[in-house]
Length: 317
Image (cartoon, rainbow, N blue to C red):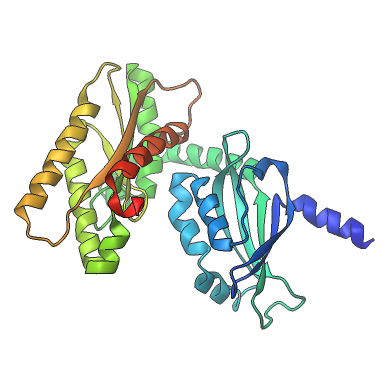
């Protein structure tokens, strides 16, 4: 009977890990084939770093907070488990929705000690249905945009940068896709990231980091192709989306203009640091039945990281 219960539990999860947050050591108890692309070491921090690389860019920042030992251990003092939903790249190279759990590894709900279970569960089918329902709801909101335009816009703006937030991204993704279908133009998708934000925060304080984020967002706004929607997707991460003719030169011109404007800013300001950004973009046709930009975001993100590896001295070190 115990073996049947154990097999039933394992069938619920793609991965089951036993973690000691005091030593940082962990042991894999069960590991499904679809996640065998995740390298496993003896260190939980290294494992989380490998998992981070295989997460969808939009969920990476939240994952870092979720897996912080100080965060999840405090959460588990108040509840039986804590969880985080994210998309993980699996063996076949595609992203699928999973839910990651932390829970106590002992019999009591709130024990003393440092051992926890780290669990990954497949929730892809449920999330796809949820996102389809959300798309239908967003379609309804489009019908009401004239009446609630001002309030709606304000609700979708990021306070620090003036760029759109996640709500704005979901809303304008539908509009950009519809524009591409109607005009036959290609989809322009660009991912941009501030260079060395952690160094700025650690060395000069978070005010300097916020200033750098605001500067880069402002330069993106002034450099982007006409009609671009710019989203702040994370602390120092941005997404640009627009529709452009297939032969448009605006993406290359944007990169050149952005670099020039940041160089001018650094020359005109006596900061003890320089502000820079890395970016990657694609200009591709909309695919039949396309409901989001995830596939093109991933391609742009890969190109951005290639540039970051060249430009960001703090990342290389």
